[in-house]
Image (cartoon, rainbow, N blue to C red):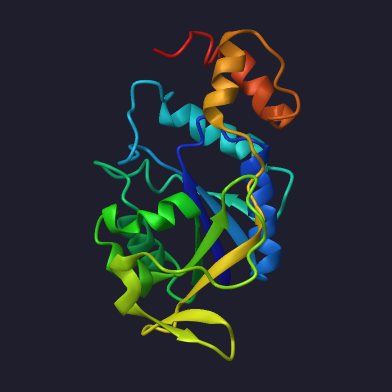
Length: 217
C-alpha cells in the first residue's frame, strides 16, 4: 500500500492542510493519507498549543468526509517530543508492507539538517516537498540543501533525486494555500469570521470547546 503521511501541530487543522493532502493523494497516486498530530512538536513553543486531545479530535472532524484520509494518535501514545524519525520507524513496524510518502514544506526541507537523525528519514520514506504559498511552479528540480548533497543522486532521465535506499525526493507542483493556524487563532480571539479558512466541523468544535478565545502572548 502506498501511504502518505502528513504530520503537524494542527493548532488548528485548516483548509490548506486538507488541500495539500488531496494534492498529495492524487500526485503520488496514494492509497491513503494518514494525518498525525504532534503531541510535543520539537520545533515549536508549546505555551499556545491546545491539548493534544482537542487537536486530535479536530483532525478527525476535518477528515471524516474522505474515506482515503485516516488519523493516527501514534505520537500521543508515547512520551517525549514527537520526532518524525521515531514516528516513521513505528509506522514501518505497524505497516511493514507499506511504502511511505512523507510530506513537508519547503522551509522545513531547507532546514532538514536541524531534524533529529535526519539521514535516517531518507531510509524510511519518500520525501514529498510542498512549495511555499505564492511561489511559482518549478520548471526544474531545485538545488538540495548542502547537508544532504552526498546522499542523493540526480537521475537526469527521470528528472528526480534518488537516495541509495531507492526512495525519492518529490517536489509537488501545487502550493499550500496561504492560510496559517496563527492567523486563524488571532481571528478567533478577535471574534472575526473564519468561514473560508476552517472546515465547518472544526469551527463548530472550536466554538463548542471555547478554544483560542484568549489572545496569544
